[in-house]
Length: 198
Image (cartoon, rainbow, N blue to C red; front, top):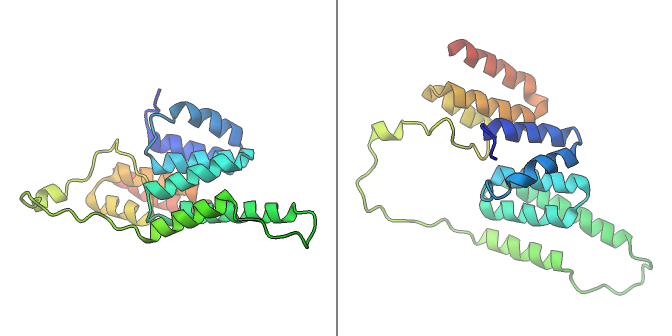
């Protein structure tokens, strides 16, 4: 059963993870994998939950999937590199003798290099327009309130506010509170101002 408001659900999961309740996050996310298979944010949260429980190979695979889902997004890429570095460090410290011959590259190294090469060569498809251009009035219509916001940003929240989509702006700031607690007070002030405009 999918949650009524995925934005708030993802914010709750993010809060669980930030509190170190990784098992709880996994229990809540696992039944929904088929519903959010193509969701960048869902996959990222699932990867973080697996990482927190110590299931590093699964976290690694999920972070690679995030990079494929949103190649331009740097969050998953940074987490993937950090996880890879920690895996490499732990494998180097587990070696018994310093004069041991260097082993052949492990599969993780090969996969990371292939993924990096693929990301560097990524070119978005340039479809030619075959229909009439979208009218300016249609362009100004914001997307529906129930559509998922994959990557919430402060700029996006301000844009929603300027468009008059106050509920979407509030949802975006709510998600940002969970993702960036150090700026929570600023986001709460923005939410208060938006609530006064409702």
